[in-house]
Length: 252
Image (cartoon, rainbow, N blue to C red; front, side, top):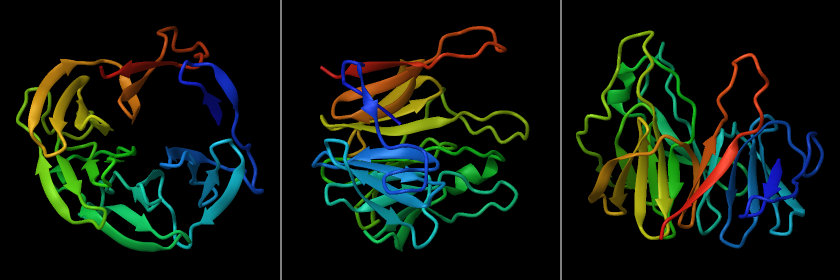
């Protein structure tokens, strides 16, 4: 893993490949705690590595049950992980958000897979939750455009979306469906969904603000009041592609 400054300058590597203290096998996702610690989900090692703000290894949390791919933590360092896909051969409305204690034990789950998305015979594995400064959890399944808001204990507070020409369910096998990315939560109280290369923006109560904003870049994360996007250079498919460019957009 590589660390860059907010100006895009390389700072250093964090950890290394391996199975020793502070090492990892297959790091999949990352989150930053309110005090600046760096939490890394190592799916291959079934653990979460924690590093201090000055990049020193602190400790690992070993999963007592299988940890999932996508890690999110709230202001109290409570651990939530996300499962975005149901098996298209054996569809189920099983829960998608799992909460773990500090020792790596699963203690709760909530946010069942939306029934509407079970029509789509397709796998899509990606993160689908974000946590705001008040510890509310926002969730979007990648196969269905609806944002659900939960308390930190898993109580559904509200759900919201709108009818729009940029999204429809595509259930025909072999045809790629529309994938919804997000949610992305900014400190100024905005919740965003990235739908079919367009932005849809709401406030944290679910009130629609503006939508169908063309935004072709792939958003990879939101932090404070900035969106970070990934852009790959176009070229010959047989050529070795360089690393992507990371572009930052800041809300004024």
